[in-house]
Image 1 (cartoon, helix red, strand yellow):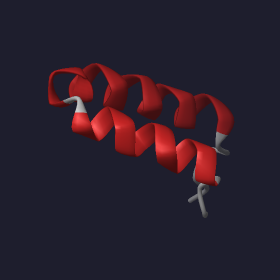
Image 2 (cartoon, rainbow, N blue to C red; image 1 turned 180 degrees about the horizontal axis):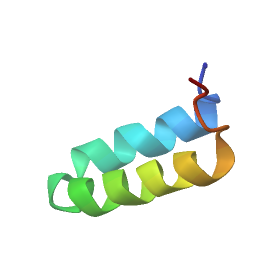
Image 3 (cartoon, rainbow, N blue to C red; image 1 turned 30 degrees about the vertical axis):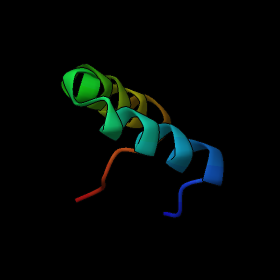
Image 4 (cartoon, rainbow, N blue to C red; image 1 turned 45 degrees about the vertical axis):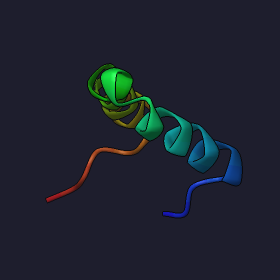
Length: 41
């Protein structure tokens, strides 16, 4: 699933701020769990 350019820009900015990387990744994973459909088995 492609990211919008805005989302990708946000990710790139956060990656540059290494001390914020883990909190951002946790938030991003949480966002994905909320907004993306659950995988079906």
